[in-house]
Image (tube, rainbow over all chains, first blue to last red; front, side):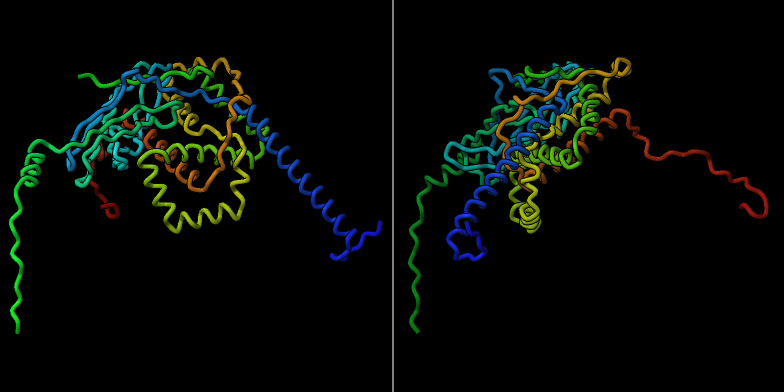
Length: 187
Length: 189
């Protein structure tokens, strides 16, 4: 078999195709072997004992507030472990039934709680409601960051306060004044 | 009306969080350094930060921060560096270190009451992660790592401040000795 370096040569073309396939195969094999070895190496890594969240079946954080005011949520956290446990709560975006998504600027108190064994701590969250937030029921999840299977359902009902709702209703019912067309004097 | 309550418990599939298991895990991490390369160690830590960043990105604060970073020059340049230097290929597919668990476990050890007794019975065996722990690991992205580093460092700062808060003194000015006004002599006045 004659093997030439000329690109137009038919024999060389076939040979180079074979070489390309072989190179690709070897590269893929090396890649997969490396990945397998890394997984094998990771399997021997030391395990870090972790924490899971066990919520009550009825555990749901609920609040009702008006736009422009602040909603407050509270949850108690009990540490059943034999050593101290750190808790960093974070809230997911809240989505309304009509499809509006609200990214609340949450003030958590404390931002990170350190709980001793058998200690019960209370976490408080203040959610300032924007003035232009549409009235609706918003749902989301309170995540206890870093814990496996974490998440406590959160429902915030945004409704106008009685007085504000009454004013708005009156404004809506009030008949509009007939507007007089402006006349322009001819010069 | 009582507040809803959640309980924090040990995982069912692993060792419980006791001072002994935390010491075993910590010492095993140091031992693992002898048998793993620097490259793999850093890649594993980076993958761990990325996993944390992915988790934080699901929250309102994390999502807001991520969107701000993604639309900034820093985000674009970071992504460019990450892609051109093929850092995703280096860090993806490796076991992600559970960096937050490790931080929390180390903090718990600092507060353990019976640490002396536990250290007396060293060496303690540590459980390996095992192949079952491997799921489909997502590709490690630049913004995941950045957000993971942010969340980790924030927790670390708050943890250290909380540890110090219990014994921090409210006194801000410390007077060591009253000023000596009766100095005599020609040089020291």
